[in-house]
Length: 139
Image 1 (cartoon, helix red, strand yellow):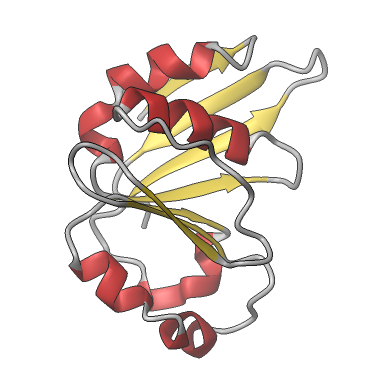
Image 2 (cartoon, helix red, strand yellow; image 1 turned 90 degrees about the horizontal axis):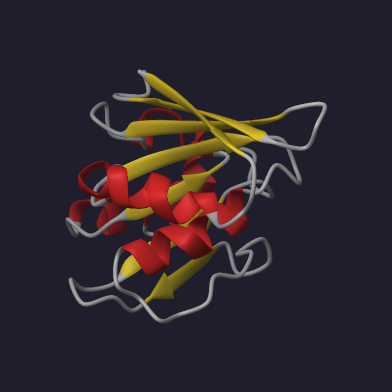
């Protein structure tokens, strides 16, 4: 487990470059609404060599971004209530693809989240800085 303080959104790029290997897998991305999860994903994409812009997948549930190593999948499961709804998205196929899968509100996936997934927790401090805690695996 390691912790970092992200004072400016641009600081995510250095953080992502330092955690590049972990970001190649399945990542449970946790944080309250407005914590900066989608902002973080945008900088993670840059660190992975993608020129795509991140956008909140709240309405689409999953976005696919292009990167030199293949697609990156970004899920937002906030609107789902149960693991069977997550399964209906084909979640297990995405995870089995071996491509990066970054999952917001990962608790909604239940046991569909792989045991070896990493976890990134984002907490907003009183000063607006983000405390980022990286752990893996998430269970």
